[in-house]
Image (cartoon, rainbow over all chains, first blue to last red; front, side, top):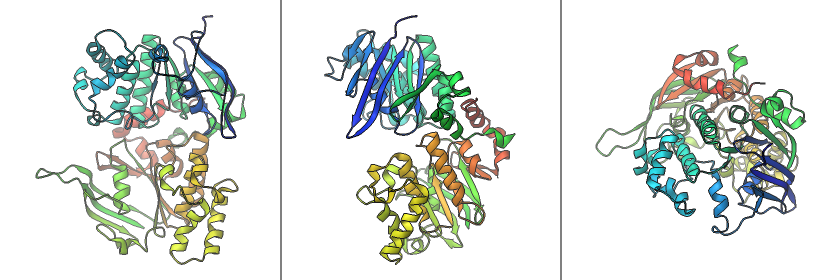
Length: 254
Length: 255
């Protein structure tokens, strides 16, 4: 067994009387793809924010390779941000409309003081996410939602992170593009040994993309395990309810 | 109920031909019928909703004909719409976060359409409370929108649309922001309040499974054109939609 890459222990987060997250622990190994599912308000997004050191837990720790991390100055977090990146939910709002795409994708390289030829790295990233290298000279509004989400993936991958934490990375996309971006993430994860933490309410996406799933209910982990096992024989009532609620296409066509 | 003929929405083109956001769309919707509108992003789904309900923002030119219970509404002003809005047609928008007034308690807000047509304060409050009790947990009426979750807000938005007893409910992606269990609750609610003998439903969604759950007929939009108008099973078998149906199957949950 290899040591966990990203580890959360006993995370608690309270907001004005409500406990959003209640003693949550998780381990993510290098290259592993973990999904976090649960109903609205179960603490999924709070967990993602804590894992990204965007918020301070009331108790518990997040550690990368055994080194604890807490929100702090950009300088104090530089080591962490080089290795743990995020893909935002809404590709329509996550790009500066007045910054050319190449500059936007290169921004983390500049902010995080990553050495090397940034222009070449951007061209390489654009190709990796299935866009033309000359996309770098265009503006965000010239791209569709799906293309912008590919750009967001390229930007997140720029500093060669070990972990990508993504809160609903494909829920704003229509189904054809959603499948493309899911398969892109799976391919990049396999090719670069990139670990993923994907928060999603779309269980089909979870099934296609992730190996392991963690189910939250009212801020607590109620179930975790391999996706196949949890989806076939859910042990918790919450998981069963989530699975039963997914509308299915095929009884109609059958 | 609704008769749409050659409906187009065209952006002004400054001398050149303008971009057609919606291009010659024609279809009918009978009373109590439930019809889904599907298509990828940018296909014109939301443009169609806006044009049908007189909500196209200033700029694009709307042409063609939309008859709502026999009344022509293309180019119609507020006077034409006033007796129709909330009674003939009602809209549930995509984002429940922005559809509600954050500073008004939910119960009062849902009663406002009734107050606007002269229903007394107590009666409006009673009917709003009854409707909210049906869609949400107890105590919802006393709360402000900010105190509700996304799913609860969407149910309140649905109550707000239903309070006037509309004969056609137009729902634009009413569940795409919701998780599966909350989505199932909202779909069950839509199932109860629409259908033969009740309100008709025009359901805009990019999720074929959601459309198939409620609708008997699907309209398929592609690049502003209506490319299919047929029973659900026929549309799912249509080769022109193979990529969408395949992707939906690939991303379906198997157990």
